[in-house]
Image 1 (cartoon, rainbow, N blue to C red):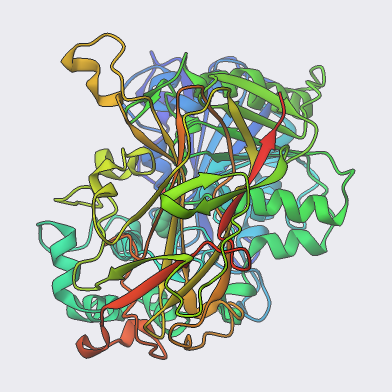
Image 2: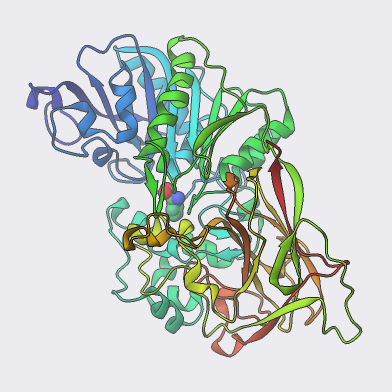
Length: 612
Ligand code: PG9
C-alpha cells in the first residue's frame, strides 16, 4: 500500500507512460518523509533528480490528471523525464505527508538546532535510501529546486552523501535578513506574513491568511506598525513570526543560519550551478552571495552562476516575457537546454563536459546570452548624482555652502503617505501583480514630491553593465531613523515606433534595472542599530541586484530615490524606536530627507561597466 492508501499508482494507471511510487523514507531519528518517485516506463540505469519541498510533493507530481509524465510534472522537469532521469519530490519534515513538526528554514544542527537532524541530514538519509531502494537508479543523484527548494538543495551540499554528484540551487534562500525573503538590509517584507501563515497552517495546506480582502496599502496603513498588524490578526502565535519580531536586527538568529557563511568556511565538494533571476522579487541575494563565498575561499573552485531575465523561479517556467518586457525566445528553456541539462548530464550520466564558464548571463537590452570568465564582469565606474537632477560619470565639484543651501536635494517623507511599490489597489497575493513588480514602469511615482528623479543625457552609444551596481548615498534626515530606496532605471525613448495605441506602453517607459532598500539605523553595523543624528550626513553603502543589462542608444539612465516602498516593506517611523515592530502611532513622523551631491559627499552608483 502507498501512504495514500492505494496499492500502487502503476496498477491504477495501466495506460500511463510513467511509473509513480509513493514511499515514506525513514530518517536517522525514525521520522518518515513523504516522497514521490516518478520515471518514464522503461527507465533504467538512470540518475535521480531530487527536490525537497515545502510545497507539497503530491501536488508537484500531479500538475494535471494526465497519463503522461511530462504533464503531471512541472515545465522544468520535461527535459529530464524525457531523457532517462528519475524525478523525485519529497515533502520536508513536518509538512504535507511528512512526519514531525515544521521549522521554517530549519537551521543546521548547532546553536540554533539542538536536535539530531537538519535539512542536510534529511537530504543525506533520503539519498542513501533512494540509491539503495530504486532498482532503476544508476546510484548517482543531483539536487535541484528554486527558492525554499534552492535552500534545501544547498543544504544537501553540506556534508553531502557520496552519491550526490551535482547541485543546481536556484534562487536559494540564503540570508533571510540581508536580502532574501524576510528582510532586505533590515527593512521587513510584509508579504511574508501571509506566506508564513499559509505554510505553517495545517501542515502546509492551510491556505492564505484569513485577513479579508481590500487594497493591501490601506489594510497595512490602518493597522499601524507591522507588529500591530501581526498582533491584530493573531499571527503572533506563529513561532516564526515571533522570532522575526524578536530579531528585527541582524542578531545571531540570522547570522548563524546564513548559508553563505557556511560555504565561506568549508570546501565545496559537489559541482554546483547556482542560479538567480535578474528581477527576482524574492531571493535576489542568495545565489550571488554563495558564489562569492565559494570563490573567496578558493578562486579556482569550479562553480558557475547563471542569471536569466526572469522573475523569481522564472527559469523553471516559460521565459518569453516579463510584464511589458519581451525577449527573443523562451529564455528559460534555453537555460535548461543549453546549460542546466548539459551540466547535470555530465556529472550524472558521464556525458561530455559542457565546460560551463564562471557566469552565464542574459544581456537584457541586447537580448543574448553571454559567457564570462569572472563575476562581476564589469569595471567599477561611478555614476554621480548631479545638480539640476542630472546624472554624469564626472564627479560634482560643488562645495557645500556655509548655509548648506547648495549641494543637496530634499524631499519630505511622510509615513502617513508612503510611496506605493506598485499602483494601487494592491493585492500582494495576486501573482499577476507580484511576479512582474520589479519591471513595473516607474512613471506611476516619478511625479510624486517625495521621489527624487535624476536623469542622464540621451545615450549615443550602448552602455553595458555586468555585475552588481553598488549604491554610495550621502544623505541626512531631520528625523532619527530613515529608509533609503534607490532605483536604477533604463528610460526608453519617448517614441512609439509603430505609432499606434497598442505599442504606446513602451514610449518613455521607465524600466527598473535594480531596486533596493536600506534601513538607515544600520549604518554603523547590521547588528548595531542606532538612532541617526538629525541632519548629519551619513554614507550609506549597499548593493542592488546582480544584472547583465545594455542601455541602448537613444535611452537614458535614471536614478530615483525615495524613503518607502509600501506595503511590501514595513514603514520606518522616522523616529528611532528600539524595535520597529513595536512602534506606536505617535512615533510615525514626517522628516525632511537630503541627498547630497557635493565634491565631499558625492552620491553615486558604482556601475560594473563593460567596454565592448
Ligand atoms: N521565496 C519563497 C519564500 C517566500 C516567502 C517565504 C519563504 C520562502 C519561495 O518561493 O519558496
